[in-house]
Length: 348
Image 1 (cartoon, rainbow, N blue to C red):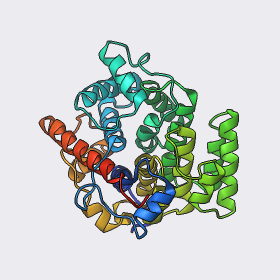
Image 2 (image 1 turned 180 degrees about the vertical axis):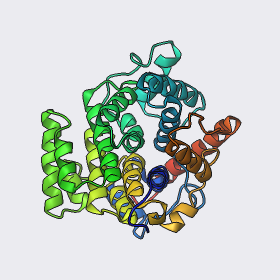
Image 3 (image 1 turned 90 degrees about the vertical axis):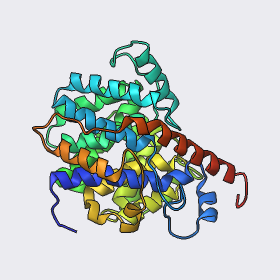
Image 4 (image 1 turned 135 degrees about the horizontal axis):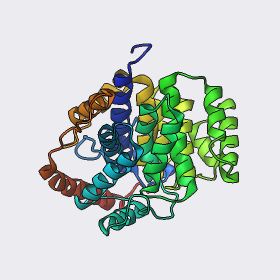
């Protein structure tokens, strides 16, 4: 693994790291930490479809955001319009497991509301799914970074807590690209909001890191003994903690966050994006990367998106074979239903 990665390598590591984490965490989504430990006591691996992994909406949102960034070429208003258009058509593809707030926002977009008015009051994870790639793209431009995160967030979520959590993920990705110290990142984290709950989370976060806590112990200190919820002030801190607790160790980052239970695909996608940005593709376990198989948003397609985004003079998005989206989503839904049926049987 190289000591210093190029911007292109970091963006590729971010997109593929998020996709692999998403796929590893997906079979355990909604399960408690205790049941995950009983069901899969050994090392985690792809288990979604015959030992292979597929992405969920977490990676799809990150990819749409990257495509919108390519089209917008630094124009935040155009970015909001491009991402809104992509979300509308993505929603028509019948994605499984879409969050309620995001679904409502997509309906509002189809009803003709503008991107500035389509969001609903929710502190869910949708914006955090999309913000790591924004942080990496604008690592050296704090004003644009914040502006693009705000535009992405308010497209679907208007609760300020959703924006704070999304900004935290973007700041982490920017911190990786700039190579700043951990102390600088923690200062930025606590300065993102004056919200009392957020400041308390940051205090527990700093104490857990300095005290060498495990990810599971940190989650328990947040009141998440059995599972990490889909609330942004729960999911994002746990994902950030896992990434820093196992800094530059992609495998342990993903395993620790998945074994905390709950919204495992989202927490692993966010943590995987940051860990992947940190270590690049070479730091992602080869068997995890090889057994991640999806289509039409394939590994090669994500690689092309990363390359195009890194080419700052390009405004041409990467073509996606849209006729394949609905058949793929129906297969994905069938796999989700099979996993749901399996959960009716022991071990409980």
